Image 1 (cartoon, rainbow, N blue to C red):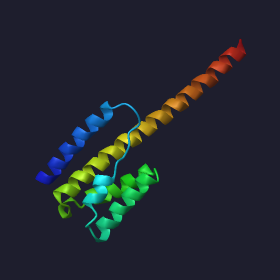
Image 2 (cartoon, one colour; image 1 turned 30 degrees about the vertical axis):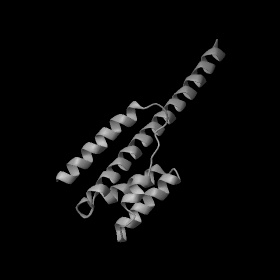
Image 3 (tube, rainbow, N blue to C red; image 1 turned 180 degrees about the vertical axis):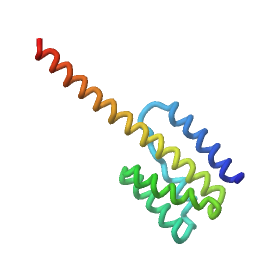
Image 4 (cartoon, helix red, strand yellow; image 1 turned 90 degrees about the vertical axis):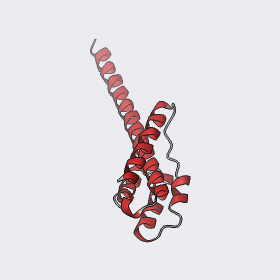
Length: 122
């Protein structure tokens, strides 16, 4: 329980820092990959998949894999919990930003379309 609380606090602090920064959120996996380098079995496979999905910019698949890792928190070391928590937060922030940018683009496109219709109707 204490490990999970520390990982959650670390993730929250990282989220605040990332949200406060300008520019596009990046998901850094170096610390994560290092923390899971000595793992084996299902956890190692999921960790490798997270890293590969992040590098392929497939955030949804990376979130699915990181969730699998987080459900096995009793099998992880503190360093692994911290690294997984950080990547989890970075993935969520990046996904949120991507969704916000897409929504803004769609809204601008719709506004432009409506303006063209309004000027064409005059």
